Length: 326
Image (tube, rainbow, N blue to C red):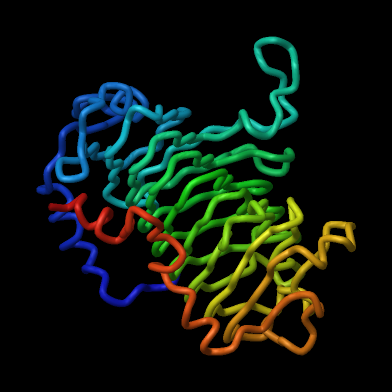
């Protein structure tokens, strides 16, 4: 992942993290309050507030577990020290049999499922380790006002399902191959790296018709695992799919046409695909499909974190994230 301007030196960040407030500490070696992340989440109270969030610090280690964040667990903050060394990993995939003998399907595979509103994650990796086995989620998000900072989200097909609500990702690394960022939520990705682990599609949005925005990528960078990898920017899982790339660096791995209609030409009249100021060898606006848009500077300027995410409650995800370290 590329360096981000303004970040603290590593030694200073770790010193601050170790001394910052914690309501619970997770350590696999038993030196904390809990040995698993799920235990800590389940033990968190249901009366945390925006001004007094419940902060769970996760010490470095690989936690082989699935986590589920109930809707009642609002204003919980899950904070690691270093995403590369603090990993929550599991390996379910859609073609496995469940306890009832039936195939579990895509939506029962996530390593982490977040149903709570106002949930925050920093400096952690969520991984689905199933590999090339079909759909296998690292994260599924159904809560509103969910924010991630400096996290890694790793998978192959369907890495992350942003199912509903508003979500914010800052300085994150997201890896996958096929439809690896998908769903119907409104989600803003700021200064993230989208890593093409294999040939496929970056996005598969299912944005509802009455929702102005779906997936918005701002000042991001797309990278590819190998020279022979190719990818579309996206395809419409549902016909009003909305995806926008702003000021994003694109490699030669991005197909010239940019977007795919998912074998349904009628979606070319309804899908909402746009770019502004794409850079790099994969940009090439002249070669894009005619049913996508190249935004003007004025149109792109109107697409901001505030206009996309604030909503009637004036949600500010950066304020929410910054409250973790107070």
